Amino acid sequence: MNNLKIPELLVPANNLNVLEYAVNYGADAVYVGGKHFNLRSIRGNFTISDLRKGLKYAHKGNVKVYLTLNSFVHEDEIDELEDYMDSLAGLDLDAIIVSDPGLISLAKKKLPGINIHISTQANTTNSLSVDMAESLGARRVNLARELSYKSIKDIIKKSGTEVEIFVHGAMCISYSGRCMLSKYMSGRDANKGRCAHSCRWKYYLMEEERSNLFFPIEQDKEGTYIYNSRDLCLLPVLDKIVSLRPDSIKLEGRMKTESYVSLVTWVYRKALDIIKEDKFDKKSKDMLIKELDKASHRNFTTGFMFDKDNRELEDNDNVGYIKKYDFIGTPERPQRRNGPPAIMVRNQFSRGDNIDILQPLSDPIIRKAEEILKLPNMEQIETANPNDRVVIKGIDELDPFSILRKKAEKK
Image (cartoon, rainbow, N blue to C red; front, side):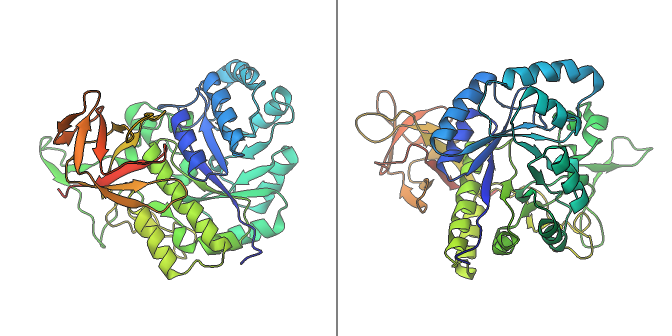
């Protein structure tokens, strides 16, 4: 394994703050969305000014930045798209990610020399499609998440184009995201970046003549959970994925917080480093899965990768969110010159709580909140609330990109 090619770790960021965390937690590349033409357009995203700042920050750490332009463009949007591409011309982007094949020729015209990556939204499922994308000018293709391990192996063997594989995160009810459910139910078009995630909603059964009588839809082995999916997690088989020699492995989550992105990036960075050292055994896997379990998630699955019977969307017991830890804060940046760091509180915690601290390039540590002092007057308090600035006695030094967590209370 020592001579094995280690793929790029590609990490999501929906704003400049999350990008900085991704860079510090070990991303090799970060993919982001602008304010137009990307499939996560309803939260965060980067202005042109943000992109400049993000590129400067990432490139300083030798991290690449890819911009998503992966929505499907209608005829009446072409002028707006051309104007937006013109605004990107002065940026030092490492690549753009597209789904619509028409954007390839336009990008080559408007952004000469730009690397072009094909999104999973393009549903690339065979080597013929990979070769076609390459002939049009694409440098990399993100393969459809519906593919098996064998199919991916065959595609990589036959193609000389860079290949990218999703290894972690939410999966769609529909084929690589092409879904009309959100638009039908809420008027928000998923293929325009405004998905309402209708497949995640809670549903009840109503009898036609009894409009106020609702019955829960129970799920067991005899039934089917109508819409939802478990979360993809290829961490337990990541060594097998790496053995395929993909150019990049990708984490889903452009709607996620810095806490989630930091944790998942830390786990997969650690896993790749262990694989490189040929030490990816049961002990290390168990340790990493235990850490990954601290992020909010649905039950994990290896998806279609090793699914011989294509039952992935049928056999989904217990697909609600699992939340074992609360994200309680981060150190203030820049840090205080004297004394322990100020913590910007995100969720409530109290004196006596055990604080689980994740830091870049370090193993997690636990410190007890012996006292909580509220700034600016250093008033001693029993409970810290969201938006408080506090100092925690017992926590004297922290990396500025630390993530503070505590075990969630059982409900």
